[in-house]
Image (tube, rainbow, N blue to C red; front, side, top):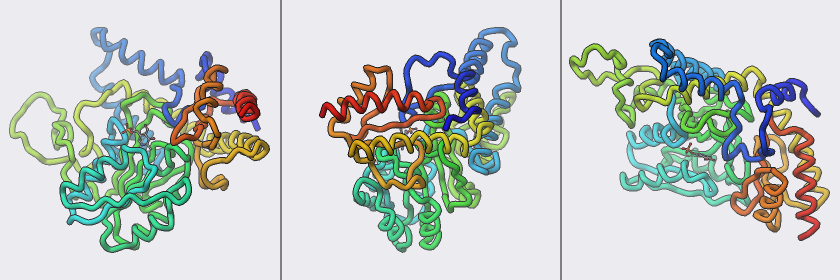
Length: 384
Ligand SMILES: Cc1ncc(COP(=O)(O)O)c(C=O)c1O
């Protein structure tokens, strides 16, 4: 069903997108309002007095505020970070501050959520990479691990980048709670497509970049750290702006290493203000539309793709239940790269991951575009 609110948004914010974008799991398309805000700030910087002194700080506060609204959190709980990796490292630092033990991740995770953990091996930690169950993470095994006494942390992507599988964070969070195990979540493939309130799910650290489903610029993201952990560790990167009185330029007396008590504690010094302004604009636009509305739209598009796949005998990767999925739907086609090329020839951008064709449409993809893509895939499937 076409949603008139999303239709109007698409016409206003994406008036001249040259290709059909089924690749939001790589990067999202930036709404016009965001492009204009980022461009204006950048252009005004070159003019004398073009940027009043309070403006950069206000942009960063807006970004923290919008991120907090998305997570149902307080702005003081948000740290602006340049990418998911930086945020995950806060989780790594928390774990590293405790006694050595086991860290659990799943096979099939994006490397950003595996490599920082592997680096802990040098400090005496064991990193257990749990094999997949079929094409997706073995949730039962992850929960058993989470309850085990020797396990210090479980780190997962809320939504897997290739299969699109959505982990049941509520159940995993409860298992982690029972085991006294930290739950670290890479949320980049989930936020903007499904509701996610980390405090209610027992998450300890959440990290994301804004360049995918949040429709923000590259190099802007945020982390959320459960308030009970915030002051337990010094920040992994020590920033002159993360200490009491930081950002006051008039004096350099004292060099006191007193870290701030809120989320700014973990921020990495001077930030790309224009990019966080862009992130704020995009997040506010998404929040105004409502994640539920976006989810309903994606489920409707996915319903159409699923019906097509069933009709053509094409395997959909992962469980078919809509709750086990967010914005990504991957198809196990015989020749996924060939399908990707055929789509590209028709002006449709999609990705291949783990040998699957990954379809990741966002609010700027309508029903007509899904029909266009399926018509191309029809040709691919009937030709194979
Ligand atoms: C699950 C997942 N995590 C992280 C990233 C990116 O990590 P970062 O934001 O640190 O570059 C991606 C994709 O680029 C991803 O799919």
